[in-house]
Length: 214
Ligand code: GRF
Image 1 (cartoon, rainbow, N blue to C red):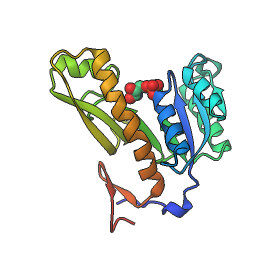
Image 2: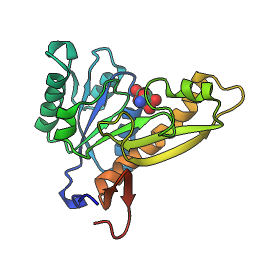
Image 3: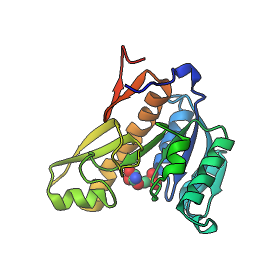
């Protein structure tokens, strides 16, 4: 098993990367505001200037930054800028919340086992884009949401939390997505708390919690 810092060494400063509407960001803001999640949102960064999540962040008094990938020579340069900005704000944990870019080595190496992502399917089923559409087209009866640690494998890192959602006979992509989203908003803050609280380790593909881990 790989080691894990105990909770007391975690500074609980969280950075969130977004690309769009930011409803998962909002669920984290609300969990902190409601006292369900002990953390500080140090910065929200979007690769898109028109992401509504930037407005949500500003309304909550959180620094909100548009980092435009077009201003950087290549993907690695952009990821280095992301990592440097997050580190400059003292971030210890990075949450991807609808961040529509692959995370490259410079960012992974800067935050080993410290990047989370939320995905709208029960991974390992339906990784990548349009997960809800994939689920409907496949004809599965159950789908859901997954929070996982980010690794170099797309949507393939250790699973922290999942929640199942039934697929109904008359579901559309929109109706299934909105039911899954309710679960996303519930489990993402819970997963962030689980990671910040420590007492877990990575064993192979598994995120293992509980006694005897530390
Ligand atoms: C969510 O469905 C999330 O699972 C996926 O992208 C969507 C982002 O939604 N990765 P929001 O921006 O958090 O509202």
